[in-house]
Length: 311
Ligand SMILES: Cc1ncc(COP(=O)(O)O)c(C=O)c1O
Image (cartoon, rainbow, N blue to C red; front, side):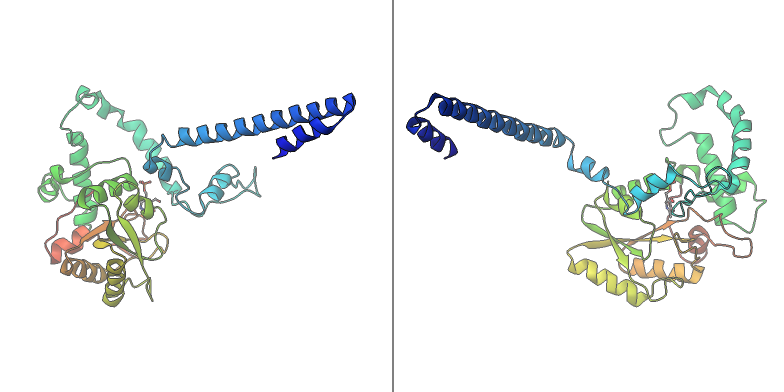
């Protein structure tokens, strides 16, 4: 419409100066139009390039927790009493810095284990046999029989079989694997609230299992059967199939410990619904001496038959 108006003005105008001015205006308008068009095309191309990343990849790079960006800026400005007294202390991070010296020392002295050439090659495909045995021994001594620290390796390996131990790169990765292998897309996992924020990723990102928080009147005591039942029904009403309950003991973020009685009651409730109980005991050995935690391995072996995947 604008172009037509300009052409009409061009026809009706008489002086050469006005015509030159009109031609200049027309050229300017055309150039602007062309640049805007190019910009639009570039934006479209960018979108096309982005769409080459699968929806799962796009979902994975979104901030997984609402506080991730603040956490990143905090990492770049960490507190130091002398060098950065106005820096931040990231309280959202559960790291045991008290153990770093001990770990460094152990790693310095464990180089002998790498003298065996078999550790550099394919072996059982389930994990290095020597590492599986070491993990099984550790689980038997510290989790299954915490009251027998002197348990011999021979006895320990009769109770936790190395072939029943899975090894992986971190608890989060192992949880993702578990949900992927045991569940189906659209299954639901009930988790007592408040819970560790990245459990949402562990359930949903790879396995497509929907996390459903359990509201609790007394989070320290753990969810009651009524609260479990209410959440179960809510998940079903939303069209999901509750197949898991995920417990974290000792608990992050509360720092509380469920008693064996509570754990057993929840396991039995889950069994009555045909659901798996997955227990994350990543902080099992990070408790004060006065409050021994009894692992689910210990609790369930004593009371009900139970299959466990330990990592
Ligand atoms: C309860 C809980 N589970 C799992 C993880 C993840 O552990 P990892 O870093 O070994 O994957 C964390 C880390 O903070 C955690 O607090």
